[in-house]
Amino acid sequence: MQPAPTPFTPYQKFAIFILSITQFTVILDFMIMSPLGDMIMKHFILKPAQFGAAVAAYAFSAGISGLLTAGFADRFDRKKLLLFFYTGFIGGTIFCGLSTSYPMLVAARIITGLFGGVIGSVAMAIITDLFSLQQRGRVMGFVQMGFGASQVLGVPIGLYLANHWGWESAFLLVAGMAIVIAALIAARLQPVNKHLALQHDKNAFLHLWHTLQKRDYRIGFAATALLSIGGFMMMPFGSAFAINNLGVTSGQLTTLFMVAGTSSVVIMPLIGRLSDKVDKFKIFAFASLWMMVMVVLYTNLSVTPLWEVITFNVLMMSGVMSRMVPASALTSAVPDMADRGAFMSVNSSLQQIAGGIAATFAGFIVVQKTTHSPLEHYNTLGYVIIGVTLVCIVMVYRVSELVKNKALRKAVVEQAV
Image (cartoon, rainbow, N blue to C red; front, side, top):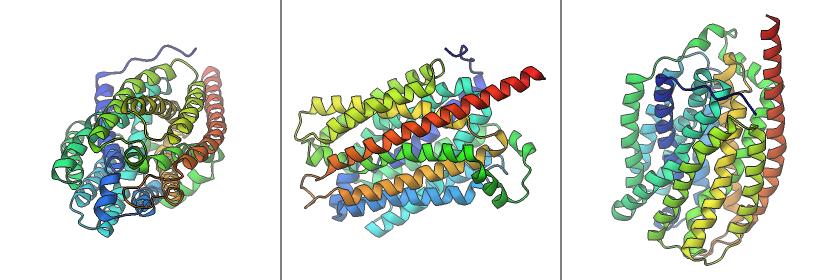
């Protein structure tokens, strides 16, 4: 058992809130592509590979943006970085809502990814600066709860608007919320700049190179990249699979996402608290095994009653979400304070690039003969995810050992002093 969790200060609670709702909008912007997938594919008459490319466009641009900015991520106040990229994200999301053709939509997703893909890494760096490792499991639980909240609140509202005013209105909703949140960040979030006193590299690219050279960091990067592949493989075609293979109607899709999202909202904080009390890797490993079983069962379903589809979704999402919290908390402990911005940027970039590759790869595996035909070979994605997850368990175990050894060395030094 680990030491009793340290309570949060009032300002820390505000920071958790503002970072959580920021992540909520960024995740919603990305998540909304899945429930709108069937609608967009029919609207533009797209094949699965084309829609997969639209999803991957965001991921690849986000990955490239993160790598380009990684060397500069520790050279500025993190609050200013957050505001800069969040403003660009808002502009890109508005562009998505104004798209009238497939090429315009892809261009809009690229612009949104260039800015939105960096926000998560900046938020992670802020969290690591403001919270101790003993607090981060709970923090990650709340911040990543945005994934579930986007399904409970954002996705149903987005689908409602899309069904009445077109799929474009969902993106305009996200942009409207984000404008209000940006104003809150500017007014209330304090500067996050203690890391500036620790900088030694005068050249931003040299700082990036020194970050990439560290072996422990590369292990963390590999673990995060593998972690993202599974979600990116299944997610783009989730709504198309539910509608065309499982027999779920467009109206029932809202209920499906809402119930699955509600379960995530409940599960994430519980897993966060648990991961601050119990070994984080053990939670991750158990959740991974559970997810593998559910993925195989779900991807092999045919026409199924709605209540069974909902049950499978809740059980599968509980495994997916329960992996993210402890893995993110462990990875956040790998870098030193002076490298956190660069590490988080590279980490986020590799996560996005790996996800883009996964979405593209999935688009070539999945086949749909017409826009109303069942998806074929969706279960193949499930088997690929199992193989990737097994490798991921090994890599996260290595990260866990690195973090434990780092904490032990720190304790020895403090005791000697």
